[in-house]
Amino acid sequence: MHRGNAAAVLAFVAAAFVPGLALGQQSGGAPPVFEHVHALAFDAEGRALWLGAHTGLFRSENGGRTWEKVALPAASGHGPDVMSVTPHPAEPDVLYVGTHEAGVLKTSSAGKTWTAVNTGLRGLDVHGLAIDPSGPSKLYALVREAGAGLYRTTDAGQKWVRVDD
Image (cartoon, rainbow, N blue to C red; front, side, top):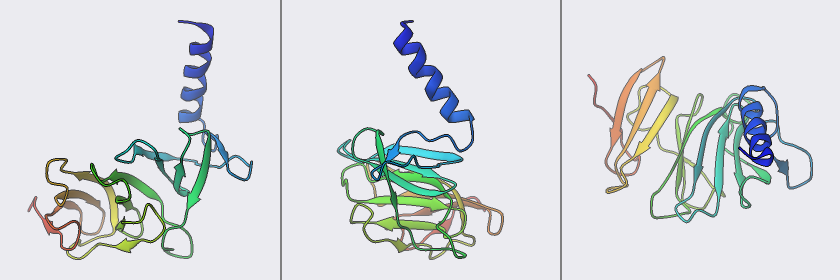
């Protein structure tokens, strides 16, 4: 392994295991504090990198060199803890996030506006989301604690049905 590669691997490992270590700079120059990173995904075109963390949702347009915090609807006076990030496989402006406090949120505007899509979910602590790449109106959500279970939607989040009863 080349020294440069070894340093890059070490920096990545340190960032993954040291709480509060920033992975990049915010556009204003200050390093963001991601704390617990839960999810990382590209949009459908590979231009935007989305990062879900204990401290919210972040977006990078330059491969992670700089990050912008994305405003999400507030839950309990602070931005939600983002547990999962699930981009639409063909539409780069469509993204779903699963949160501890606000359930599933959806944007069709690359993060400018958000809508809660929780009808049918018996709880809002969503730890996992998966989208069917061959039929992206079908998603699965894994809910913990109250209403724990696996849920499915076939209409892009408009109505969820528990499937593991």
